[in-house]
Length: 364
Image 1 (spheres, rainbow, N blue to C red):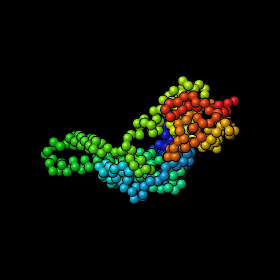
Image 2 (image 1 turned 90 degrees about the horizontal axis):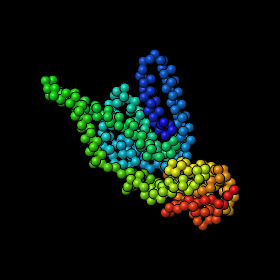
Image 3 (image 1 turned 30 degrees about the vertical axis):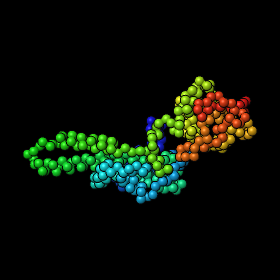
Image 4 (image 1 turned 90 degrees about the vertical axis):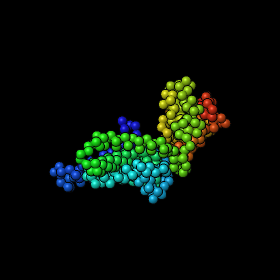
């Protein structure tokens, strides 16, 4: 299910499992020779590295540039200020404490390497611009810093929990020494309940007192409102959604509609059941699609457009959601807009500034 939902999520999951398994193999007294043990470890990591590169190269590549200095990135991962959010000092103190405890424990030391690996990924995505790094290593996430930063809790939270546990144990030991063996009022159960209550209060205060706005890392600003609000400049505006949801009453079930998917039209199939193509946020990276993206509006005068449409099943309709944008995760397709002044197109439906057009220039 994880592979189907988000293949890139397999990479950190497998990596953490391999880190744990490597630690187990190095520590286990199972009778294996050092040569055999290291052969298995190196073999596992080589296979994983190959899988990583293949998956990274199978995407549309890097869409985000670096945005942070190397020293700033070091502080980001140490104080959990990824993406320029305010430093999470409380959690970071517990995490650093947990790193020390985990390093001193053979059983938990693998967590330190897991944290170092995910922190290194963030360093690469935030501060390194080399194409080899951004395509072959970070391509599975489109070099998107938000996706990489979202991996941090996988190791930060367990390490903070390890630090909190060690702190509670040490405080409990000090209390018991000072109260003496005769006083058992502050026993193990009471200590555990008190520690749990203190942790809950700490997290509640942290959430209430320290709201974090979503940073726009490329612009160096913060969002004024939630990105999940349906407004005119959101990924899918209310007008666009209204038109997409009405497609099944306008277009036949066997008809295909094409569009620039990164304008929000990529949700068309999900919202209407109509074959709105492409069904993903990115379009095909082919010369044929480039002809449509740059010149569909010239269908009446350019025979190459009709030939390109034929290769995609002779779609009879096109959605005009504007030319698109030249920002990470979006694409400009100037040929898929402004049909009103061009011959060979007939307006079928319109909601606000978005519209559906019938392509008549290539009728067969």
